[in-house]
Amino acid sequence: MDGRTFIVLCVLLRNTGRLKTNGLVSIEEQVCMFLHILGHHVKNRTIQSRFYRFRETISRYFNSVLCAVFQLHNHLLVSPDPVPENCSDERWKWFKDAIEKSNDTLDKFCQVLAKNKMTENQVIANDLQKMQLPLSDQVLVMQKFMQKPEVAEIFKAQQSEEQKLQFVASLLSGVFDD
Figure 1: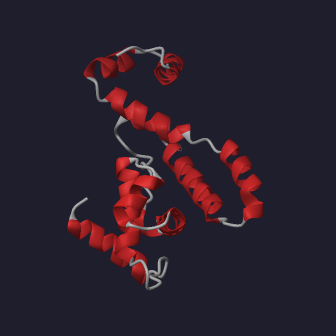
Figure 2 (figure 1 turned 90 degrees about the horizontal axis):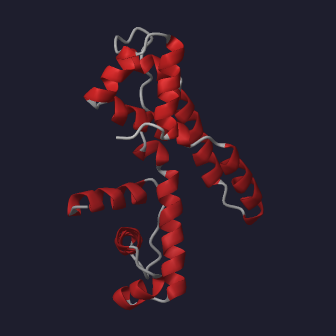
């Protein structure tokens, strides 16, 4: 992350009111600790020695920045446009509802994360079990496979719709080897 992007993130967190400075630790330092922990996968003790803060302080500010970034999902995440019905690319007809379903999943996931009361942790666990997060991963896998010319040729060689569905299912289940 370059300096400009870091400043833009800090300004965004400050202007939306999601993160506040309390006189001891500035917003820039809070975000810096947060990004350092995420980017370098370091422990709380390492940050304690580097920033000269107590571990409780680091943990508190990490959690506050994490919640602030989660609440910025409307600003940071853009919903993808659905594929039009008259799309000429034949491989998209298999995934016409996948993008819409992944949008619903993302919205549901963000609503679950917005709950911050201690008594609602059970709801979070139950909601996460019901969601079908691999659907968007399957779309990405299919995009990756369909970009390979040999896979696209095999897909086009399938005669019936049932054979094409079986081929797609075999790709998604990992039967097809690169």
